[in-house]
Image (cartoon, rainbow, N blue to C red; front, side, top):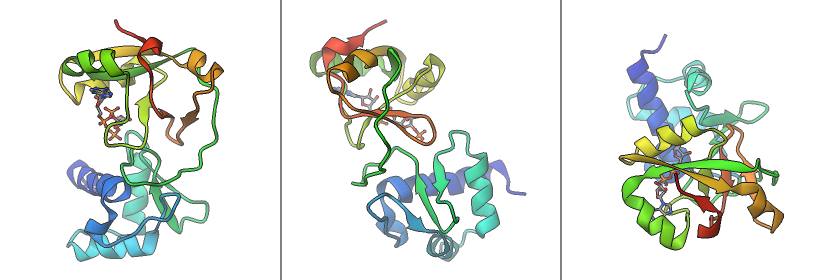
Length: 182
Ligand code: HQG
């Protein structure tokens, strides 16, 4: 149906506009990050990209990290995590497992050791329940380092964790004392 290249192109565009810069495509997100599917399709078509609901659904379904989700009646779409724009995804708080993982690059470790993990340009610090995912995330930034986070201990003293629809753990920040270096 769609080539891998075309699928990736649309997926990257969706990440950009649904997480970071909706205005670039002339769309807006509501408080929970949703945007109207018909308007989105129309705006993408106007960029000269071939897309209809079937193609959009294909991109959403085949996305390797399940980055995007439709609402129940398929009239709205949003990114399930990763935003830098202010949205409230309204995920319930969930008690995390004892340990969660965070992949980063070796050049950030000194700073993380000094100040803990902070969300940088995004709305949350992103954590995963498995090391393999953390390794991939770390590799995006350089020489990967996997940090272990004492998540359950954090939650016991009041830190809040959310689990996104695509299984990424989200929290506000991780103080140094809960981070274990390899
Ligand atoms: C680092 C991808 C210095 C942090 C992934 C990371 C994820 C610090 C970088 C999602 C720091 C921020 C998010 C501190 C944190 N000093 N560096 N105090 N605290 N950092 O891209 O977690 O493929 O904003 O370690 O799968 O890498 O896009 O966050 O290296 O879920 O769907 O600052 O993005 O998803 O980088 O990635 P990012 P991330 P997608």
